[in-house]
Length: 289
Length: 315
Ligand SMILES: Cc1cc2nc3c(=O)[nH]c(=O)nc-3n(C[C@H](O)[C@H](O)[C@H](O)COP(=O)(O)OP(=O)(O)OC[C@H]3O[C@@H](n4cnc5c(N)ncnc54)[C@H](O)[C@@H]3O)c2cc1C
Ligand SMILES: Cc1cc2nc3c(=O)[nH]c(=O)nc-3n(C[C@H](O)[C@H](O)[C@H](O)COP(=O)(O)O)c2cc1C
Ligand code: FES
Image 1 (cartoon, rainbow over the protein chains, first blue to last red):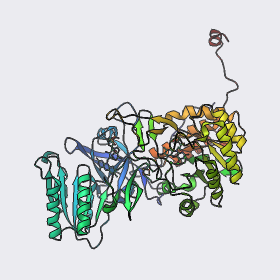
Image 2: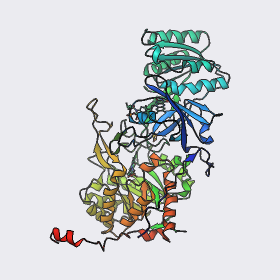
Image 3: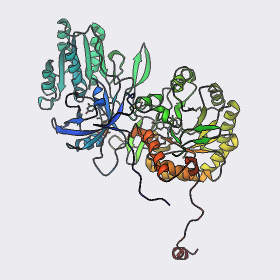
Image 4: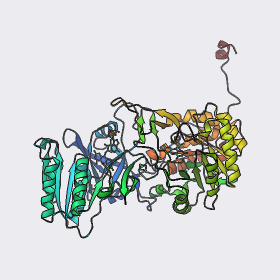
């Protein structure tokens, strides 16, 4: 009946040089260009994506929701949440540090420089620094380091001193030490391989920092043990804290209630959405990681 | 320029593209202009506060996702005080989805939702994930007729009824809803499904069963819309696997007056406005003046038959 095919699909996603026709929006769907996507170690890759300037408003603790290409013959149906590892305003890039885990991140790992990558964000509530905090302690392990790294940048910009306790299986798989140091953090590394990552040892380190008045607040991500420890110590010593949480997500906007976790607020157990109420939460309210 | 507006009973939608309940909230205003949508559809609410189902609430399969949320919410009072005002900031009509396992409570909920800022009551009688033994009235004609009649008596709002694709005979259930007093049928909710993990032999979802959501379901739901449209006089909203403008056209040709969209908005947060833009252009390129002319316009009465093939099967 009609000439076929004549459909050209429109896409309201913003490309790098597009004019934003709906500037009121807080969150965008962006089509960026991969600048590099290199291995950081045997399991993790570091991706740099050039994006529309609007995406550069992301701050520490926020995430993007990534439309990962398929690594095989089938579809990857849902987006995958990924913390902002770094925002490079001069180069117009956002960066991710990610572990190749399942199909989504393996598909992401196949992207090459010059490829398009659809990312939505920035989403969620990130870290916040209170003016009275002059010295903070950041404790991270595994994927958690990616989430915590931009906090070191934020602290530096606000003139806050950072002690970063980086935990890993062994020195070979430790990441981001140089990055934290380049941001002026004093870095303490602890490993499973020599036993230094044991809770008792990390507790001793934290006690030392508290005694030196170098721990006005704790920030953690990526380890249930580190969360428990900082919760317990924070409660006993009156050190406030924030934790970044993870959960499987669908919408990323607070609509679907897929990403809920249990929190305890004023003695009452409540469910909160990691994508909208978090991913960063008051450490004392978290119930398990 | 094409007139995209469609009428659902006495209500006019500025275009036939609406979000699907549970896959949308006013919070999407962060990324799209909600005033462009045909309607605003709130997540299904229940009268009493509910936490919903245990996590994980979503798992991917080869052919789509299965999800089981369990209708969490803070109850009717919170909804009226805090959520309705959020939607009231926008122009499109507010369609409020509601559910209950008990007919009397459902009717009470319907009357409590009879407030000025609510434009439509969408009765979710088909949620597959809340309780597979109760509350799923849409599995049976008789239950459907009874609950719809009770809701009809309890509210003066337009009453839309969301049906289940899991019913054995959806046409009979649709007729029962029409007899009960529904003003519009929403076809359909999700398909009851199961995924078992091979690493630990456990069901992948916290609630065991979940609803399958996938564009692969579009042909099945389209068939249901087509069959139901041939039998009922009230309008239909088609929901299932719409990802592009032609899918809207296809549902309308089958007899739907509008569509609902869930999955596509998860995948591309800006999908709904893109689909509206594309639909407008699709119509303009073809000189279609009113999108409503597409409703039920499928050409199924002059199916050409290859005479040789017909002879070979004995026709
Ligand atoms: C706010 C937030 C920030 C994150 N930031 C980072 C980051 O900076 N770097 C990084 O490497 N990872 C990060 N993650 C985790 C990342 O989202 C998951 O590793 C990813 O979704 C797995 O997808 P996949 O397809 O590769 O694996 P799948 O095959 O989907 O899953 C592999 C495993 O990961 C678990 N998983 C799946 N989705 C999620 C999810 N959304 N959150 C947590 N676990 C999940 C599954 O239960 C399964 O055990 C973050 C998660 C959240 C919620
Ligand atoms: C995460 C999620 C939550 C849902 N919640 C509801 C709900 O609360 N009420 C309802 O009637 N349907 C609910 N649905 C079903 C959708 O409204 C819709 O019928 C279904 O997703 C099919 O449409 P789609 O293929 O466009 O996604 C939900 C679907 C999903 C994926
Ligand atoms: S992912 Fe949908 S509410 Fe968080």
